[in-house]
Length: 146
Image 1 (cartoon, one colour):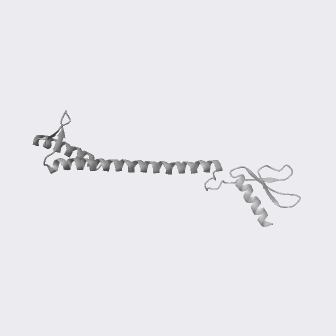
Image 2: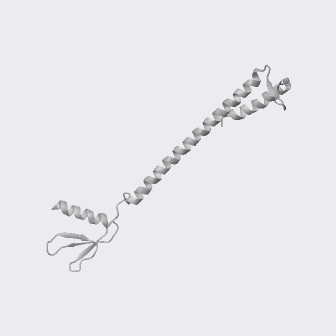
Image 3: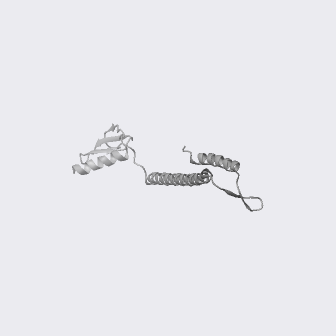
């Protein structure tokens, strides 16, 4: 019996949190009754109910939206991480190619090039030095760490 009354009170207070409540004694049964409307045939007292300080429960739609927002954030973060990894891999490949190009000119020796007619000819020492300097700049630019 007490459990039923407590449960009824809990439901009334939960559903009418912050609303005007009335307390009266039922003349037929002698039991105390809580309601949100004043009774017409009984003497009632107004009861001030303070809303609980806990977080408000969200509706199923709001919970769904929050979960979808979380899923989207995780997907966006994964996409950004993937793009960052792709950029880093491309930068590493470009750096390695620039290092190999520089190494060709740094080693020296006889280096050939194709002329306008498509024939092979040896590069002069000045041409090799110019290419070494330009490939060095390209390597430094490609391999610099930000």
